[in-house]
Length: 497
Image (cartoon, rainbow, N blue to C red; front, side):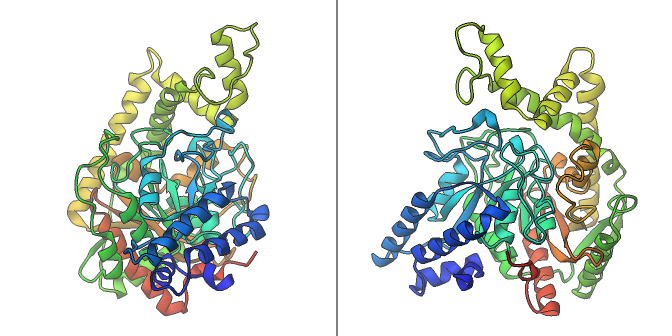
């Protein structure tokens, strides 16, 4: 089992296609790993054992019939519990959807099934994807496999922890302000936020519709690229879906190089609040990029300093609108429906019982920002700042091919450390939020361990919209250089559970 679970997704797919392994063997090995360690990690909210084995048997039957298998056929995956999955609970980490069984698949779920990817189950997350630590889940926090007393990032901490704990070689996350990249950074894994509209949002429970984006999570750049290619592409069911060819991400991941590329370093992505070890590893990564043949260009993007403030007006405003549908009348939890309360009272009681503190905080912030007399001063002003941030990116990409930065200002912090300080929690997304506001593509990959705490540090790569292949070209080159220097992927250093 230990040999199988440490294989990359690409290696697993190759061995299944050749007959060296069966999909059932691979699935059983990962289910056994989940059973052995998830009581400690709590990466999963629901494990679909029978469904996963049925999918695996179907892959093996295809191979026996001589049918051609796709590049990820039979490879297990952990799916963030924000994507609807027919016949499998989808809770979004909230009590208000506890036990809800969707009658349909999200487009991402459909595409995974069509590619014969084996879905192991649904992973833990901050309620409605609101958080940076997975502590806001109504079902309890997830631990970081590097140190179970630390957070695995958020909101997609369950997906990142499943990868780092070798419970799955692939995972799916969503990124509204950094919720794929920040968990990847603190768990030593790879996470990609595709260009906004590059992956369909149909069937993905909405938090902030102009920011939300699903994307791939993996332990290697190539594995992320293979998964990206499976889930990306135009979807007529999503009005924000980009009707354009998917960038050649797999080809870029197989041919990583930065020779002759111009790489930007933004001066706003360092300074007060950044951990010394994070800056040290980032500076080493910049030096490595130079050694690999890249030209480093200093950039000044002054509007990035306003990104956090703009985000925490735009995202809560959209959240207050999107979450209005959870009224206790149509689906999900219903409280107080005993014949003595009006429909309005049932809705109020349901929301009081069903939503957690962070969700309520953001609904109130958003409702206030959209209220009469305050709309222009708050939400309207934030949208103007968003335009300034987009323009700063446009100017930057006239000078460089990609931008690099630390993914997060610090390594993983202790569970409970920032629970009573929302502002300290929000600062975890300082480096990732500008990309969501502009709609660009971005990746986080491991760039070493911080010397002061021996925890993973992430390197963020940002590319222009619909130039996602540049992320993989640069990421693959950096990853290969790290492997050459240290002999093995950093994820293998994670302590065994």
